[in-house]
Length: 220
Figure 1 (spheres, rainbow, N blue to C red):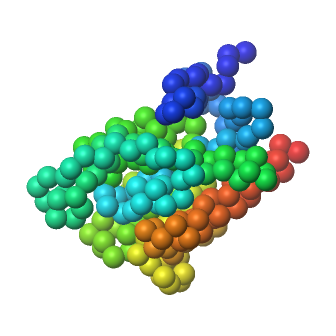
Figure 2 (tube, rainbow, N blue to C red; figure 1 turned 120 degrees about the vertical axis):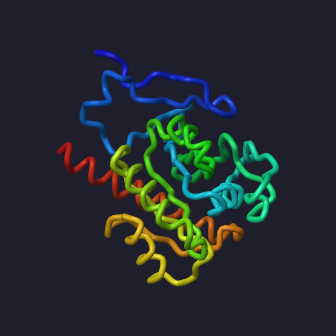
């Protein structure tokens, strides 16, 4: 039987795996922990969303290792929104030492011209962390199209991080308007605050646990 994964070099020596063409049409588990050493279960989290939503801020606020970033100075109208932007990816990690669980956080660029990087990074993802700025109303329609396409394509659970929002009900309404399912968590947050970023991580961990339990029940 062909190997389920092909291996390619990942950031900081971490291997990333993608489904081989032969397995893409088959039944895939929603969550598939991998081991990159003798102790840690490793999960890949795709942190994505519109331009300037707070994706880099989230990874920087929670990563326990130095963040690998590909920021460059913005130009034109984008410079009125933020001074720098991600052009390839951000990469950080979060580890629960007591549970030997490691999250690999892959952040995507927000601009449409760099969307091909999302297609590269989304392989073998366990959870989508979709970041949306509650106050950037002009981005919401396109964000909904992107989120629905991702969920159809990846068939994995999502956590909606509603940045610049303190109201749980508003966060839920916005997430549903984007196309998130009723069972998917919507987290109001202020991603410049590490404590708020960790609340998103907690929801990611709970989502992973629920998805793994669901997979185990289906297998049984």
